[in-house]
Length: 565
Image 1 (cartoon, rainbow, N blue to C red):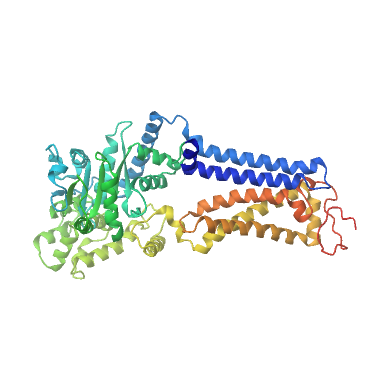
Image 2: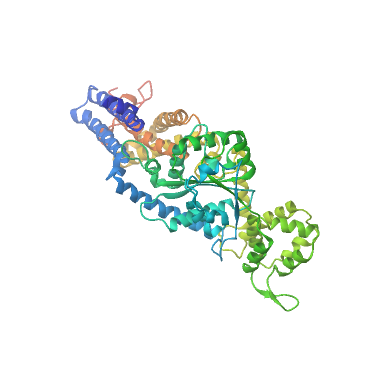
């Protein structure tokens, strides 16, 4: 039974392979060095002992990296990690809220209305005990936490068209839950649903991997296998806030809904946002999210939009001497006139995203929003394109505090847009940006790094220990040959390692680089301790006078140790 337990534990199996490989390498090198004839005991055993020490040190490092996070792995220890995660999540999304200026002076008054069948489950499943749910019915952003907690299953789906404020609702719920959270409570974590491969990844495995990617400290291993993120998810200390169900490829949506219904426990909470059409198509083809209350965001009223734009613009005197804002004349025309430009602008200002963009473009600048009604724009799409084009220059203007210029922002945003289009996704995954590097560079970079590292270490040691030997090698012309042979061995091994360990192209460049450094260290030991059978020299002899003497009489023109010819 104990053997079966070890065999089924992936982490221990991987650790056993590392141990076997390193110990086997060490034993081979000890045998090669210790039993070569013609050397003194010191010459034989000095490199061998170096191999043993290096292998033992590497094994110690690997073992510590696997177990050091396991001190006190009780409930209190895990709760402390959950509390730390809550602080990190709050810091992250509070910064995002400031970036979106939700606190300046307050978020837009986004509202929603409950949705019934066929997009929602039966009332008997959603409200099994007929609890009061007034907060859900009122549909106010300021009561999003109360609305979420009023649902017995703690499952809520928020629907809406593009730009209707779904992400703002998810962000507000996360911050409100964190503000009222007690130590030891579950932590709400926003997870972009578009990064989930629902066909291949179980829900909890994806959640843990995504959390570990956003918070690298939770990628540390724990005893028994898995990461800290896995442990938190397994202990039900995470409330998933899945933002952007519609960002999943169409072929992934039904498998995702199937996994949500099958893998969530009866009392597992979930907050999900999606475009209405994508969710409706999934429900029509498969099923609803079990026991979830469903709400749909309402268009922003003209009164709310006008009040928000007025409150967030600088006061100034209008041409007729009144005190107003840059929006005063434009908003007056929207009320008094009903032509195509006014109708198009009213439609644009019914979407919170467009209102936020209009604020950024006109609220803090000398630009006049009345240009939106000057006859150039007759449709809402034309106004939206204009606001989108003006948004980046407004945010990255010379008067802003950004360290990026408008031109630089355009260039880098264009690069990110092309990268996402190439990957066929609308989600920007920062931890996958290394895929933007050409594949050939991803494969060659570890080999180049390992070769340079090995060459630098070897050259430094030889210059410090045996400068005369280096001079002799240089004068004889054999230094380049020796370096090219060793470099070829290292580079070939590392490039092969990169290919074999990354067949799918999913390993990060950082991981491949780390493997390159580790392999370079092992290969450095390998080349060093076998230098005598390979090149006629060993580490133990580097500092000895006359260790390398070039003899033109040698037919092979090789460097020999004390050539007897």
